[in-house]
Length: 475
Image (cartoon, one colour):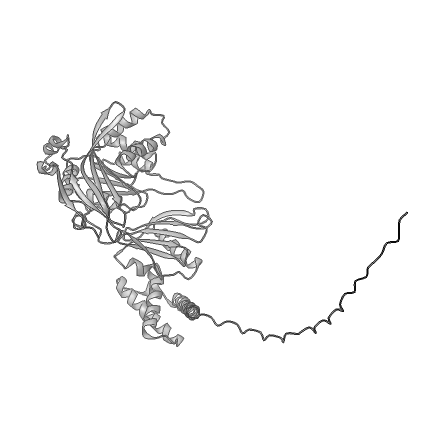
């Protein structure tokens, strides 16, 4: 049925022989890359710094072993000179290959470790620094004229930084350890210190130092820096002499405490002033000042004395004026009550971004006292207790200004009515990134002018005429 299938055979050309495999000659191993000049220089610098620190630690240990401070007599400068001679002798014994400048630096740093706060001493000696911000042992920033910059100051290690923190807090009877990893303290010059240590601070102990210095700013400095005007200063002086209660508001770093210090300078020397603070930093110049400072709990969690406890107790101390460094909690209610019950002329500060925000902040803090007061009752307390609100603000680029002086007029319904007497109008940002503007008198005459005159304060009607008081030049 089917025929035979025919098949066709196709012959393929013979396969070409494979080319012999060519073996690559072995490559010589590459020599390790030479470090870049910058890296090599940095490594040499780090090694040199490490050797310097080791030598400093060695001399410091020998100094402690040999030194008998009890046998040294004289004032602080004399004792420091005596110790310097000992350190110089120890340096000669080590036979170090240091040049003159390095040797003097070594001696000064050993003295700073012995008498002061180690690496911080060089920063504390610079009056242009307003803030020192330590983020672990290797990163220290400072603020000058409103601008932050990284310094080349370093701590040896975490233990070195912790040792300096212990020296700061133990000087004011406080401690900073795992039980109390956050602490507020102060330096001898009144500068405020806040420290947070591990485990709360993840990258090493963190220290923030707000400096006030031995020569704090005055209202004359304010005027020279165009932070306020002469009319504003004279008006606030009249308010203090008239025993008005003044609330200073502003954000962090706006200069509230410095302003509080300067306003308190207008209080007559014949009056008894009680100051209440978390960490005492106010520097009142009057002769009759009682300074109270809160106390944290001890290691058992007992013994805490809060601002509120001190404020309640101060009412029994026959104060003419009460100055509270900052209201930040339930003590706000006690402060308002004190202002409403005969302690006129009191001053305090709170954190707020505007005068209207200050009212809301006070309402919130009064509620923290645990009393379920209606909002209207709190606002009535505020309106009758506070006569003047001064707002301090740190503007773009760093300048600090007194941006408003506001009168609290009273209540209209459930609303507190206020009016600005003086204000700062920002006009723009200059070429260097700093804000500029002008101070103006709004043209509003305060309702309490007659009370000011009755108290004997000088009041010039021209202060309140609508006008431009001063103007910044763009920078």
